[in-house]
Length: 373
Ligand code: NAD
Ligand code: GLY
Image (cartoon, rainbow, N blue to C red):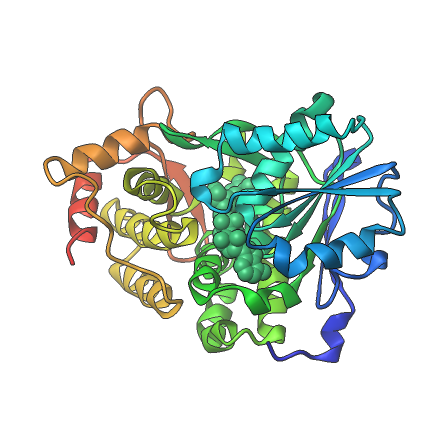
């Protein structure tokens, strides 16, 4: 990563949710500084939840930052991967909290990507009916999306993120320096969620992403800082209007209806979440064109950008005997479904998204076209 001194001063994005408001702090070298965590709820114990990959990289830095504030800094390390976003892993957090006699003031710190963040948030929402937690996201995907907005969950074998709660963190600390160690495939996965914000809200941002894709993939600090900040601003605006997804917030799921079907159908962890979302966005753009919302030029533009981010654009065959049927049955489980009708986030190619159903025949055409190598 090319560092610049101006980015060592964190930029802040505010999430305005009344008494659940908080800030997202974005900068370099934040993790090891006690000042990054000042003003949080006081407690005798902090519990850092992380995983076996992130712990050796960043746990000691975070522990040393928290030690002057919290008399006891504990840790629990979970197995790594989407396949472990389960009840069993969640229970490891509860086991550690109870074995250490943690009380309802204990503050949880989620150190890792979206999997750790979603599980830590759910543990915080439910341990003793709710304890405070802080997001310390270490993947690009988590910094631009999953750590913000309070969605927490674990997966069920029948569907992704099916068991969870809305529960807001006290703060999000995005240390861009942690992206230095992120594998390239994971960086690309994060770029999918960055790209998402363009078609649903801000085409000028899409122009910027196209112009800066090289810098983003080269981990240029200025480019990453802008991408994280603008993504968080757009998400903050949406979440501020519709915290619990009674309407507008569903647009943040652009690409996710097809994407979640890919993830579940392939087996969690085969395709990364961001890879499935990237391919899912191209599929959703195709469907937008079929229903007459967007034009083919936009579909081509989005596909080119997703490919430039290093993401797959050909969808996998989930069932050789009945591929369309398998996609449709998985998508019916999507949380946006209404009385069995699958609802998609569709875009007009001019920065506006709508959530609506589409005829199965058109969805089937999109699946067939998208799965062709
Ligand atoms: P992840 O949490 O699995 O992290 C990706 C990989 O990178 C893991 O192997 C992890 O150990 C490793 N890693 C993390 N930080 C690292 C670092 N700095 N250096 C090296 N390796 C590092 O995946 P993700 O893409 O961060 O998150 C995906 C999850 O987020 C999915 O479960 C998805 O459902 C969820 N999600 C939630 C929301 C939400 O609003 N809550 C939004 C989007 C996605
Ligand atoms: N990632 C979708 C949402 O937060 O609503």
